Length: 385
Length: 133
Image 1 (cartoon, rainbow over the protein chains, first blue to last red):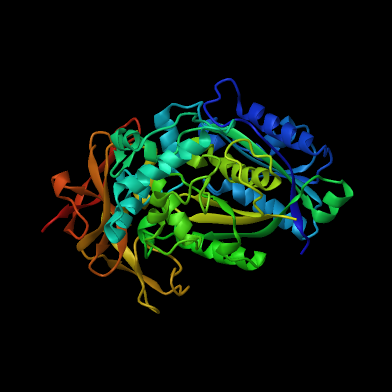
Image 2 (cartoon, rainbow over the protein chains, first blue to last red):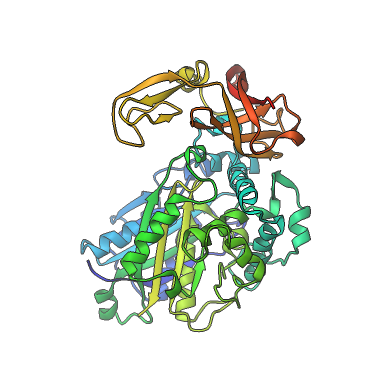
């Protein structure tokens, strides 16, 4: 298997981008990624996109992307794994390059969510869950994670404040990130007094509806050397795992089995332990998901994650910075783009060019992208060469 | 309006109207809805069986912001229920003051209106649960 590196990156701002269509966003992110290391020859394209069919009434996004980024007649494929679509597209391209089948791939993550009203967006998002056997009971995505939060609070006596602290921290981190959707610091009281969506989760425990696109140029290490790519970032480990489509069918509601499984495989591939990782971008679609993620990824014992949040050690200046980008909560969550956006944050931090809560000389970072109620998970470990 | 079409609802009559699940003849795994291959052992020897009508709440939430088609019920409790034989499923909790719903509550399955679909207003029924303790 060949070494694969992130060579180029580009992304739009995340947010309610009223003036930009799905096609505009695709082109903007891809042009920036191509310009970032002056590559103009690629072998194939993979696009992570969750639900353009319901958001903008357009399927066949593979061909659309090739067309509107000027890459016809290249092979161009759309990949869908709910909120993990971006990371799955990245992993698909990784496999193609590692196997020697291609030298350079373009990976795009994209979602245009604001062309529909909120109730329709909520409907689209609900399709990532088990529509037939959970959705039919009136389940929403906040409700699924509220069930997890309630179970966790019951089992480990977690105070509501720990959830609030995740949101406060991630808004704090997003404040200095020029690409973030929310540039507004919030207080614990703001979170707790916000509209209740599904107990115990309020509006400020939930990631927003967002538009955005993130693009990455992935290539073999040999190709990067040939092209004199500056600061290529190596994909040290990457793994994907699945779990039941319905949350109710799990043995545990406080741990996501797919995260545990994908992490185990990614650490093995990278020959690393959690103690070798300097910082994380985790899938905080809801505040509780950040707490379960840092435990399932092996950084804290089950039931101790919320204590780490409260102690401040997950802050940008803390022992284990988590979501320096602002996370899904405050950077924004254009569903298909998120997994690729996390890779961009890791790459920028590792290259020392992150605009925002920049870390001091990190050597290795981990991204955790979760789909649905934890039914698909990708864990990726990147490192400085 | 809920966008689950009438033919799709019709195919669910076994699960929604008769409350049937699968029992694996090889490893005794029980699961709802029915499967064609056992998620535990991979066996294809699965048979239909009637699920027990009693269970308990493992975790719950109160849905305050309901999706389209469910706002008439809001706020409504939603729970993951473990039936007496270990099968787990998602159910709305009805006939119970929302303040009284809690983890560990005993429940029984009841047959209720789920939602109305399409322009014709086809009413879809199915299982929900009621607290009994």
